[in-house]
Image 1 (cartoon, rainbow, N blue to C red):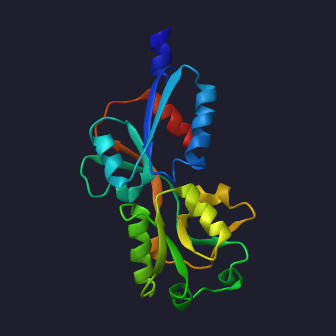
Image 2 (image 1 turned 120 degrees about the horizontal axis):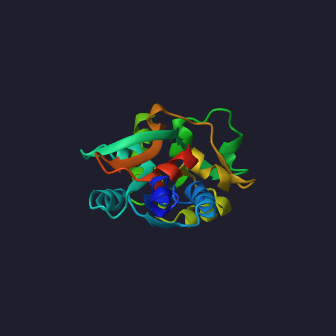
Length: 213
């Protein structure tokens, strides 16, 4: 009986890693549903920056990482399966002076005061590359943090702007925050599952991924 349950992913362990942004409501809501439906499974969720998550995955501390495709690119031996385009956007408070513009120009962004993500994050690297490619010559950064909660609270209460992935941030917007009308091809950010190539089948992980899809 127990062996049959394990084979179907109803019993076992799910060890998953994710960047802090993904580990918010986007992932925690799915995990809550999974835990309710699979009370005999044990879940371990770890968070970290790119190099930390990659180390966890390669060393076997986690079985799967839910994160951007670029997390898997520098390293061979990792397989990426896309789930959604978690495209990056420029986030500000509702009522921000730029929010009323039908088209935001690079010069508008150069004139803003920015909140930036930590230097070791993929989001910070992608933001800087996309800004440069879109013609934004400089960013006036007055605050850096790796705390998503701090980002949301500061942006809500000031005229600072920042970048955030659109899909994973959607549930946080409410009537306080909004994305500006500005886009660039380098804001493309495939989000999906990353596993070690040729890793053993994990019915529990497969069960959770089916829920995510």
